Amino acid sequence: MASSASASVSPAAAAAAAASISGAHRRLLLPCSPRRLPRPRPRPHPRRPRLVACHAETLLPSAAAAAAPAACPSTASANGFSDWLREHGLPPGKVAILDRPVPCFREGKDLPLHYVAAGQDLEAGDVAFEVPMSLVVTLERVLGDESVAELLTTNKLSELACLALYLMYEKKQGKDSFWYPYIKELDRQRGRGQLAVESPLLWTESELNYLKGSPIKDEVVARDEGIRREYNELDTLWFMAGSLFQQYPFDIPTEAFPFEIFKQAFVAVQSCVVHLQKVSLARRFALVPLGPPLLTYKSNCKAMLTAVGDSVRCGPQPNSRLLINYGFIDEDNPYDRIVVEASLNTEDPQFQEKRMVAQRNGKLAIQNFHVCVGKEKDTIAEMLPYLRLGYISDPDEMQAILSSEGDTCPVSPCTERAVLDQLVGYLESRLAGYPTSLDEDEAMLADGNLEPKKEVATRLVRLEKKLLHGCLQAAIEFINDLPDHTEIWSLAMGV
Image (cartoon, rainbow, N blue to C red):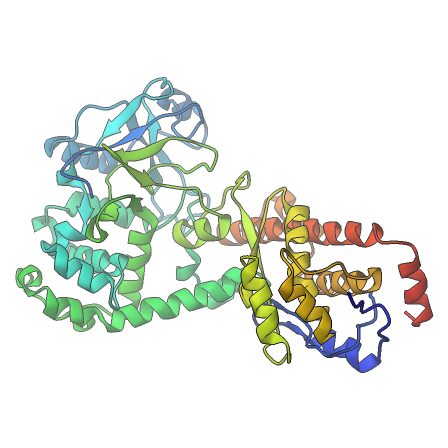
């Protein structure tokens, strides 16, 4: 099988390889062949969802929590919410609602956050509380017609948008609404997570700059655009579900609510919705009192909400999703990950053949590689066969690969070095996109004077950088494992 070891390197080729990394999307674009190698570089039937406790400390014993500085007995507001739940069928449980002061007050007007804590010691398998379906909000309940619900959610409106609109109209009714105590509790939380921080969807432009360098910033912008598109379709819901909205003596959605109000409601719903599994489309998202955001999330906790016979998913999720959806991150999250996006070059004369090879091995022309905590070297090893495709220029070699099985054929040490150098350059470019270094992040966090949003953002980008540094170290280790004569080749080429 032909080897690319005999290919030489030109300055133009090296520049082309450097330019192949898309800065806007942080995508690793494979080289285009034929080319010369770059120079190496150093629904359930009405049943009760229930929370099952586990050994993890998601539900803290209330006595212990009350003794901690961050907790205090629940306020009259929380007691009123609890009274409403009991009046409408909530069975006695083993939990209590406590207060947690927020770390940063808005001119002293911020109220403490409420959260659910265990009222007694719990064992694995204990039922901490049950919520009757009469107190659970689903799209089927809101619209009263499953077919309409499914039509809406498969067209242009998501379940979250429909639920948000429903709660906005209910809020307009004030105390006449059955859901008034629940809506009041959601207003108190304001979509804030357990760290008293709102989703970045509600941050100002200057606050979003705390996330500069992180792909989450672009994701927030894209999500905001998606919410605006849904806002523009809200009147469709009004006309299609007339039997629901005729009870409200208010204007059509886009006249009754400006976009910013809708976005706030959308984010609030997003922060407290739970996802039911193995149910119809109209029932898969539910708002459960005593569920999020009152429940404190911990990624290593196995406690979960369940509808008898069906589960309600509360995790696991990477920190990027936790921040956007709930306004917090979990620094001990074993499910955290970043994405490295790589793509075949569509201008490559052998693009179609290379795409066939990639597809044969379960990869796409644009492929996302998920880098998980502690699995950085495994991910780099998974990426290498895909990246090598960009360095195949000999048509006979390409045909030999097509006729074989498995990944691409073995490559010369020089080619492997070029592949790894391009990967190293990509990782260094991503790290350079952050305005601060990992050490600077550590120093700011150690100082302890960051305002909440900046602190959460700094903790997030620090975790991202740790994963990128892990990948970079893994790539360098692969380089160091190459035969020594690769270095001689590099020196001969004037590196």
